[in-house]
Image 1: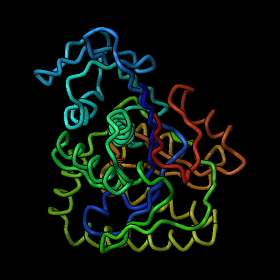
Image 2: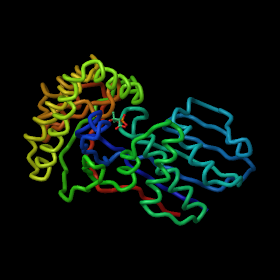
Image 3: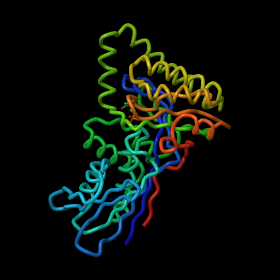
Image 4: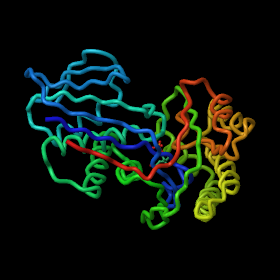
Length: 318
Ligand code: PMV
C-alpha cells in the first residue's frame, strides 16, 4: 500500500500586510510543489525522511514525538501536527520532497501540510474534498503557528490565482495568467508574526500617515485585478513597483530584498516587489522574455527560481 500527494507553493502578487486590515489581496499557486509519499514500513518503526531537505526522524507515535536521526527538520512541526490528527499507530515510512525553498515566503508550510494531509487521507482511505482539506490544513497551520491566514492553504489546495475581496470572499480569476516570474530568495527566513506586529506598531504610532497608505494599497490591488483581467503586463509591472514602494514605507524591506528588487528592474523586469511578509523571504519579478537575464542578475543560482502561476492545486493517489 502506497499513497502519494503533492501541493503547490503560493506567491502573493498584491496586498500583503494591507490584507491584515481588511484590504483585498491577489495570490496564486505556482508550479513548484511539495511531494509526500507514505508506504507501509516493514519493521515496527515509523520513519519520516527527506533526501532533498536532508533529514530523517523516527516517529514515536505513542508519545507523539520524534527522535532525530539526521539533519534539521525545520518543517516537521506541520507534518507531525497533520500526522497525529489522522494516523493510527501502524508503522509507515513517509518521504517528503520539496521544490519549494523552506521559509522563503512561498507558502512551503502550507504546501507541505496540504500534501501530508492528502497523502494520509489516501493512505487510510478517508474521504475528503478540497473544501474539507483546505479547512483541515488551515487548522494544522493555526495549531502550529498560533495565527495563520487561510490564504496559503486555500491556494495550495485549489490552485489557480485568487482575489480575496474586502469582505473576505475568494474569487478565482478565470483568465489564464501565464506570465513568467523570477523569485529571488534571501537566506534569511521572514518572520511573518513579527513583521505583522511591527507594521501594526508603526501604524499605531503614525496612524494619519500609515492608514491612507494601507487604503491606497487596497485600491492598488483593485487596479491590479483589472490589469490582470486585461492581461496588461506593463500595468501589472507598474503596480508591482508602486506596491514595493508601499511595502518599503511599512518598514518590511531589507537591504538584501531591496538590492534584488532593483537589480531585477535593471536586468529587464517590468515589475518587481517583495512577496509575503518581508524582513527576509523573497522578492518576485515579472519579466516576460527576460527571465534568464533577471535570474542571472539578481542572485546566485541557489537563491533563484523561475516560476509561473498554475491552475493545478493538490493532487493525490494511491
Ligand atoms: O509570509 P507569507 O508569505 O505567508 O505572507 C504573509 C502575508 C501577510 O499579509 C503579511 C500576513 C497575512 O497573514 O496575511
